[in-house]
Length: 141
Length: 396
Image 1 (cartoon, chains in turn orange, blue):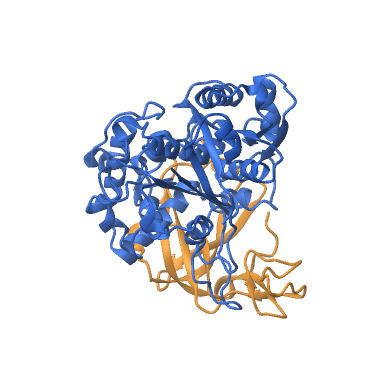
Image 2 (cartoon, helix red, strand yellow):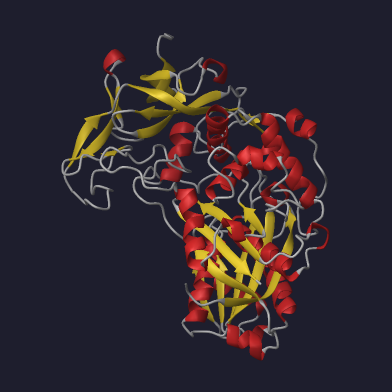
């Protein structure tokens, strides 16, 4: 669905962005054509793994089933998921992602350290759609 | 500073869920604005429509759709889309035509028939569309973003759920006085607290609904207004339609990540603050000159953020301004005297125009029970998906 936004397994799982070879600006989701820094406009964008850990900028959850194109089974009761916006220090940016399964808003605080882990967005008989999740550091599921 | 244009007429279709098409609503609002202005539709030189993209094909050609409904009369036409800022861009387009001498009188119309429930992107698989992506990859609805801002305010500034509820209490009390509003009854803090959580920490009554609705304005050159016998009209002095400045470091709808500040340090102002700043600069006034403001309260918490972004108070002081009554009717700077989106709900292409209708009625002294005594200067603030700013300053 979204190509080359993340890669790796287990401890080496990382979000992938691109970095401008001229000005060092980082882009996520990846930008492959032109650097978006208006003072640069560089065209050589190099794939880069983003920091594995960051700090919670803010968080919330979804108590109601989101509309399509989010995929969920209308036959099953809705299970709220968390959304966590995470500040990455080295990249100086905030990246949004779902919390790992089982992480609720009660487990989270602004400023808490979290790490990126691989997860499953949705699966059916034919396909498993993988994604990234944020998980508080020290929690294993 | 640029020249001023006159607001000769303002009109709305009442907001709610009426089960009709956006063309009908827009035509009612347009006819009301023309009647208010005392201008015959056949004397209008240009019509500018703010687009709805959920109305199917006609929505993409909003200006001509309204011109046809009012009766073809040969006017110049334009249609604009800027998500929630569409109405402001329609006003900006009309103003540019008037100041350039391309027309003497312009009709601006925005109308929508909103779907029930969450807003969602148009259908199909479109992974090159950031709005489609945030739903598909994250399930991130609009309230999820409102909640991220709200939680951040609680953590950084110490805002409380009670502060958020009091915004709803204030706006519902004002909406009860507005015949155009969808919700016309007072709401208590207990009712807000008892409503179900949509996206923690925000509850159903912290978040604006989706609505049908329409708003229209008749704008003219100052010369035309004088010839028309209106010596002292409400005047539009500034229209801000700015985009963000790189790096945009506040996570905004519909983005999955902010810009990186690794290569370029963030500027002096956030995007929201820059929207009002551009309007102040153009009008040659500052926050202390305002009599009232209409701001985009998608959520209660977001209204508090706007207080700071408009310069009504310092960073983190929004809740204090609310608590001490400064932004209530009778306070130094009443905010959302119309009742705001809390009382109207979202009818996307209409809402930035509706904000200017409220300023017009306030500056004329025609706002009835919600009138701000001696109102001379009003400001609107709004923000559209994909980096669209929107702010209008009107004076009398």
